[in-house]
Structures are given as structure tokens and as C-alpha cells.
Amino acid sequence: MAIEAWLMDDSNEDPRLSHRRNPNESVSLDQLAELGVLYWKLNPTIYENDQELTKIRQDRGYNYMDLLDLCPEKVENYEQKLKNFYTEHIHQDEEIRYCLEGSGYFDVRDKDDRWIRILIKAGDLIILPAGIYHRFTLDPSNYVKLMRLFKGEPVWTAYNRPQEDNPARKEYIKGLTEKFGVPLAAH
Image: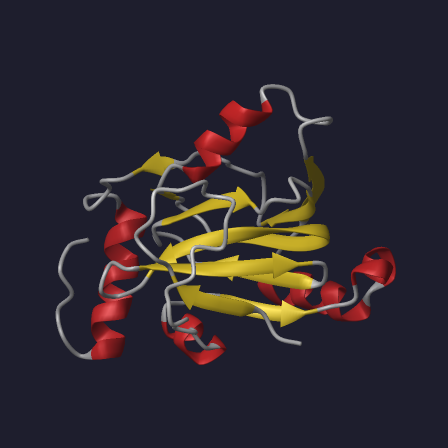
């Protein structure tokens, strides 16, 4: 089964809830791809010897890898970490996450500055492009085990919104403007 994504409601309730609109407004893989969000479905039980994962890493130059367990029992200052992850930000580089266990949500902004919620579960590998506004939170299960991939030495610096003058953001907006053929508002 492919990844599931939808436009978020405007509720300020617990960010770990699904925040689906009523009726639900699904977002397709093609719509995510238009924003530069890439997706693969892999087998998380064989990640150490998965040829498809190896090929993705080689093809995209991901030479760094680590594992991150996110849950209250394993992360110091867990609630503060989640607040930091949920603060809207960009990165200078792609953000690559492979969900090995558990689940959580990546939220990304669409071209109209609306939030799209992406549910990631075991087996989902997602790549967010440099310069896209996004955030992350867990779902009510409060657990996810993620593989983080990176090109070269990892740089985990988050640049909180607004970042319209950031070179990665400018490049991202330029790419969207070219793709959609119209200038986009500086979100």
C-alpha cells in the first residue's frame, strides 16, 4: 500500500491527531511529487541487506546513515524535542527518512501554502526537498524508529520560518515557479 496524505484541517488540537478535513481531501503521490516529495515502499525487516535501499543510496549519494528511536522512554527532553520537530522550518539539504517501526506525520506546505499531512509507517522512505517548509510529529502511538540518510557529513540545522531569503528556499520556489508556469507567492 502506498503512503497516505491529505490536506489538514485548521484545528489547534493535539498535533498527534490525524487532522483530516471533513470530508477528507486526499493528496496523491503525483501531487506530492510535484512538490518535490519522493517516496518508496521498502521492506523494513531486511533494511540491513535490502538491495533496493542500497541502490537508492548509491544512486542518490547517501553515504551517511544512522538510526533514531523517538519515544518518551528513549529520548531525553522528549516533549521539547517534539516541539522543535513540529516548528515549521526548512533545511539546506534534502531530508531523507526511512520508517523502520512505528509511525508519524510529516507535514509539508503545498504551492498554495496549505498543510499536507503525510502518514509514514514501517517501510515508507520519504525524501523532502531542500527548501520546503515542513515539520514532523508522532501520532498517538508515540513511537517511531527512523533511518536518517544524508549526503556527506550530516547537517541537521533547521531554519525556522520565515526563510524567503535562504538560498535553499529561493531555489525551491524557483523550481516550483518553473514547474507550474506562474510566479508563486513568497510563502
